[in-house]
Amino acid sequence: METRIRKFRHDKGITQQELAELAGVTRQTINALENARYNPSLILAYKITKILGKNAIEDVFIFDDVDWM
Image 1: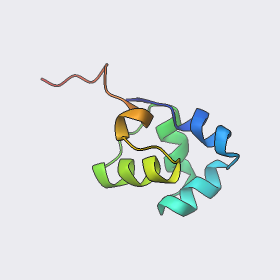
Image 2: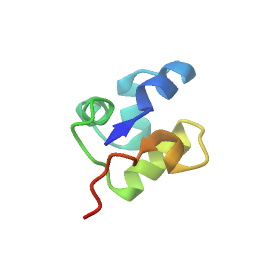
Image 3: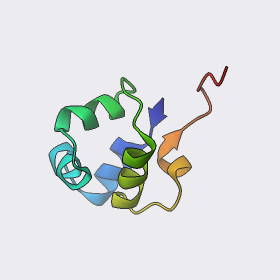
Image 4: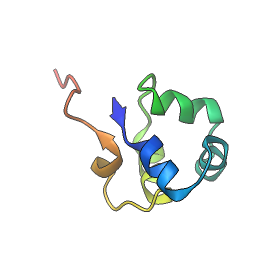
């Protein structure tokens, strides 16, 4: 799943480590999310969305390419 985490994180001026600490995960998890190697739980997606100052999960996480079937 593609994300806009890197862009929004840079816009806020926070590092992967800082975002990880705020979200309660490791820096490696943030890196994996930014590089589309990991799909987060709904709770983690929500936390990251709020930390980045966005209103909707869809603002941060791109669902267009997700295979629903």
